[in-house]
Image (cartoon, rainbow, N blue to C red; front, side, top):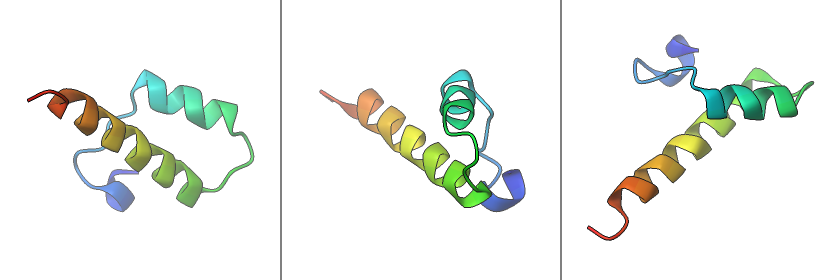
Length: 49
């Protein structure tokens, strides 16, 4: 995954939960899920600053 996403990729619990929940999806779907979760994290950490 690091070769597709970059060095910032980490396989955290939220990501693994979403991947397991979406069994049968493609690698591209998993990458999209990872980016969605990272965007949510960024918005959460910058909210109210």
